[in-house]
Image (tube, rainbow, N blue to C red):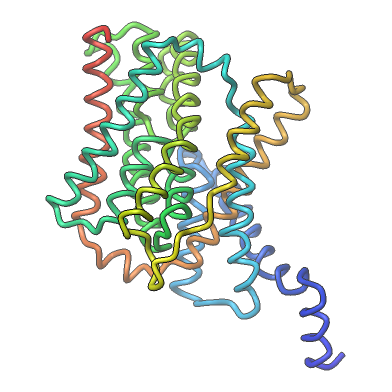
Length: 340
């Protein structure tokens, strides 16, 4: 078959143009899962490993011919599908178990952290887009919130990659630091679980940290964390609208980004999971698929990342990430100690 004929077939069937890039991002995600079999590496989520591997490929080998469309598809369509599937991890009943006070505490910690991070970002001279993504990732749920916010506000891939790396770093530190502080801070199992669930970044990190406090802490921590995840959709939809109305949307044309319908799908899946008892043999594979698809999207982000640009940002965004992590941790802990 001649190159011209192959090109014509590719135009007629999108699969031929998407397949190489999809295979690349899936391969990177599989490598990330394989690396987690190494002792010590399992503490890192496959999402952050996928970003790192993708960035390594892009900044050493360069762009691989023929993969562009599939990589872009992973970064956009597959990302949105993975976030929709994350909704199946949440139920309204779980949120109710935290109680009105717990939900209020989680919401206050989330909004206060986001506002404080944007404020401190201005003081430190961190670009607004980076500060927003760091604030969202810290206050809500790490990588998935960062990429959702990037899509809703027209953010840059490099900014998102930097935010994912920084938020994951401090979330990983918290994952091991929190259990060590439980006894010195005289926290009960339920208090420790609420603290971990309401302030540690990624779902896996929060669940790991809470689990070190025992079964009760694990249950409360998991529910609190998933309640934070449920707040992602309304917060990010609102941010996208605010950014557009204030003329802060990224991109040369200052266009309004498409409405993030995938977040509506996320809420719909959460509602379905609340109303219908989905069998474990169905829900478990869907949860695993959500993590793998999100890892593919993170791989695509890494394959778009220019490390020179990321490193040129300097230490100020890293300092902002440290501030945001300390702020949400201290704020939530203070509220718990005050019995609010």
